[in-house]
Image 1 (cartoon, rainbow, N blue to C red):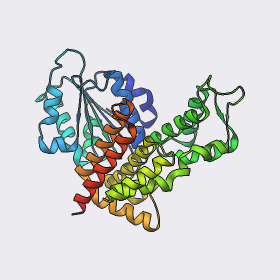
Image 2: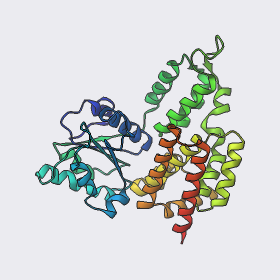
Image 3: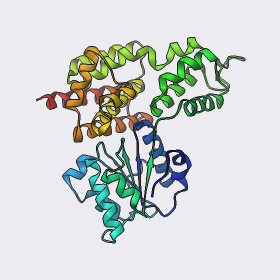
Length: 348
């Protein structure tokens, strides 16, 4: 079964008798948001290890039966179970396609719901065709918000806190966020915190102007963030560490660095999933000069299992930051160090 792009927002949560979901598209932030919303509708506590199993490409390469085993496992304490799989390429999704085919044929059982997250997939690709052709599975495309959709998201989120954009701020802010739902969410939250929550602001201070956008939006610190990410993904651990701590001293948020890292990994993933350099540039990848050369080198280093491992490490760091398991500054620094060391090994 399949949903149209316009049906995904509500269609995923209304789906019935579905064993597996494939959520895919070029906007990885939107894919992740849709997958998280769906997952929470199935298992409210996604940190429950008895109810949620997360698999990576490396897991499936090490043990081809890992997906089938996870799907067949019974809950130790009763209740629903969920299996999540994030893939970076069409070929990496082959085990999920094989599982659906065998499940439909009656040779495999399922005691859990499967959610697969992927980038852009070609219509003729096996993963997408298998999910679309199955009565027990559902494929849901996630394409970038239109300017109108993005404007609605921003204005609705701000209005919930009694805030609104001036026309000048609207013109500057909205275009800078097109093509990345996770970036949009992050920047909206940053604006709200900058202005203050409802009840925390002075009377009448409910308008966000162009000066507010310039003070805290994504555009102001791009060069600084790119320097950190380029060093980490390029295998320059000492440079990455020094740039990271300079940024922290200047007031840059560790969460902002993490978001920048996730965007860069998504841009690299776009190159490998078929979108090419042009597709990555639509997501904000550098176009010219040394920055573009560095990005090309990063694409050569980070591919397949290595790219998926980096994405998973960033995902786990984000989860840890949200749950306060350690100082966010330390979590961010540890992640950058691990990625830089991995890049050094990949460079050979």
